[in-house]
Length: 618
Image (cartoon, rainbow, N blue to C red; front, top):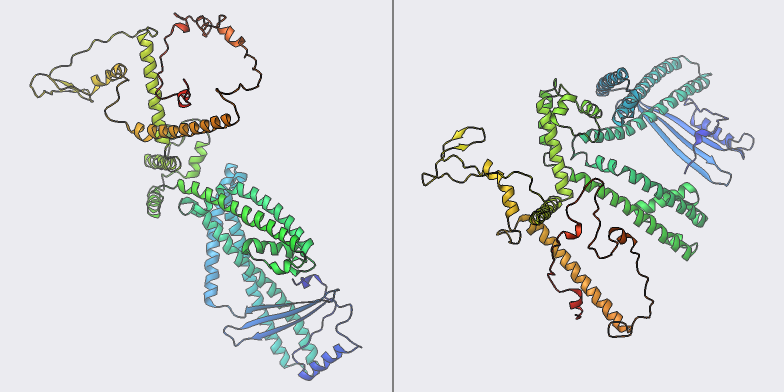
């Protein structure tokens, strides 16, 4: 690494004008090498040799400043740095046109951002306006863009100033005397050197600004792509896992810094990259990114020490931490892609934007919708009528598009992330309904449920009339000409619940329901496999017990009998501990016609062999 020579003060300056002959320059160099007037002494720190080259015949003319600096360190090492800066002497029309267009674009963006800022100031939302990252980045682009424009214009004006100085120099040099020509050239060379040095600094700053401005534009384009879910996959993936990545980056920095200092201490005396902390950090980053290192040179210090350092660094940092970062990114990438619907294409987006453009005057912006919804509570259900109350100027077409988009995203997210959620929910509901029906039948059968609802006498429908959904009567005649066909309308719906209660639950349905076939049966098969595995484990335990001389046919286990459990809680419910005189657990002020013990209990018959029979015991 070459130190920055700009930090050192220039104590002496020697200008060699172009009016000197070659022999005079050689004599001057010979004098600088002599012991009487040496140019380089024992106290010299920096020596800089610079020159100016002007070539008006190359394309539009070129002005080049070359500079070579030598730094003499106390340890005897000489550092060298060479720098060139080239500028065009004339500006083409295309460049001028590009600067004008660029200035107009910046002016438009500046006015648009200023109007938004003025609206935020009028509403008193200046802090929230700049807290929004898109607005902050937009102003950053505007400020950096105008800064680059000022640097480019300053550099062009500086070149024009140099051209005027050069014309003055050539005009005055023709009338200068030969006696003072060297001093004349030396004075003008000082002016040229100062002018070109400032131009070189402006040119470097302009180049850096233009280079980094492309990165700012890329970030702005990525933020703009958030309006389209498929284009915003990269941004959404990073933003969704940003918190986890930041915490993991902190852990990565702590681990890496420890290995950097360890490598500097162990290998700094033999390897140049580890001689400084900065070099050690760069070499460690090279191992992480390129997976390459000089194993032979590292092991020259000590084989076992270097082996431990390399193995620990590669395993902990390269293999574990880096792969955890990739796993986090892949996990968030899967979550982001699961939220993309079939309508999230460029064609649907273009159609939606065209629809927005056609209804531009009546279309409510997303920021206004979010601001209106923020006034409601998070648990409140937002219906179409509620949305119309919050935003009266919103159109029905925008409401339909908004709800259709939300519905499609919700369905897509549920189907892709939890594919079995619908069958499982239906199975749970149907099983609960069947248990409820069984309980109602049992309570009705044993008189625990009083029929307080008056009995309904079946009403006979009119022979030649049918009540339609609109309330009008239409004549319908059966095939035999007398009786009407059985209806599945209002009358059938009234007796559907009664038929479900009177249905015999012991008779299997003729057609296996979908939730039983694809949901419950698979669940029972999994439970059967788990029970089979449990049986095998019990058999293994039983075999191990017999090997150790324990079991029913062996001696008893020499263990003390445990104490009997406390029955205080049971005595509060039934002092006799028989279960026949249980006190009713009801709220104060309520009564129950029969004790809980009088309620019949359904007998559950075993459907397969028990554990005792599997063990061969009675």
